[in-house]
Length: 358
DNA sequence: AAGCCGGGGTA
DNA sequence: TACCCAGGCTT
Image 1 (cartoon, rainbow, N blue to C red):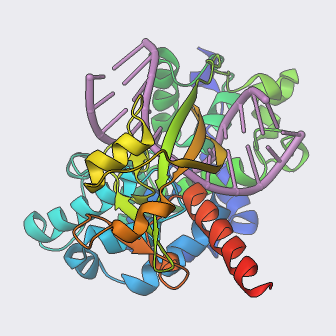
Image 2: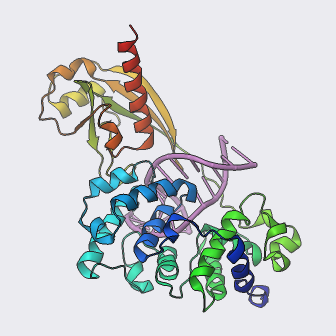
């Protein structure tokens, strides 16, 4: 097969990375297993520029694994708020506790042990091994997939079993015996800075001479695309309940969208908002008034959020209501999903300007 | 194997 | 608007 006979990429890649690689990323100084692990979890499906401020805040609060293992999930979710994929925060918490309980307070240094921990799959385990422990292991993240698919002309969508198997095989074959950490960082740097998805900078690429995609002029054909499926639209009602300049929030269930975060109470589908107020808050409610809502795009569906105001009823709400009251003074420190935070701030600001404007 | 899970940058 | 990003988990 042509792929097997193609020249190894490690030597050219390492030489290039010494000059042009990224050497000042926050998790590289120092690149401890703990810092590499946290960064890798944050970086799952998330761009470097997005992650950096979250990583800095996280490390300022939890500089060591021991501190994280003793923390509550709530505080971790506050630091994760806005980053998305909130199951990652839950898994991070669970893994930190497991490390304290069964790994003597350290991240394991074998691939199998790492992969048994929540939130750590094959690629993340490989990254922790190579970048954190300096041990030989292989990654296959989005960058490596793109570089390898182009260099070896692997056509087809990478999320099928066959292509995934071939790419992993190539990735392991290309991983050198020495300088594994530098190589691992180098292939990601190349993918992120030169071998980009759109308009790759082949003229500067150290692998261009032997790149199958480059020599055939078909860079844009690799990696293959998966067929897009239709994005459904979900309509959901949320309750807006005010009292004393604060709004009622409740914690969402740990699984599902926005798992574990605080949110405006969601009214179950098919249920009338007034009826819900009655059942949930324990008093007779009239017909709820609809406030302006919002739309939000997710990866796999579109949310049309409609807001039912129970404002007129709020005076009757007692302290027994399960939930959290958020206002301008404490909303910033709460674990809120981004669109809900945006909506809350907009409405609070709107009310503020109305009360001071006349 | 396919669906689920966020938010934002980019074309 | 559509795609995809330092993927992993669940069914």
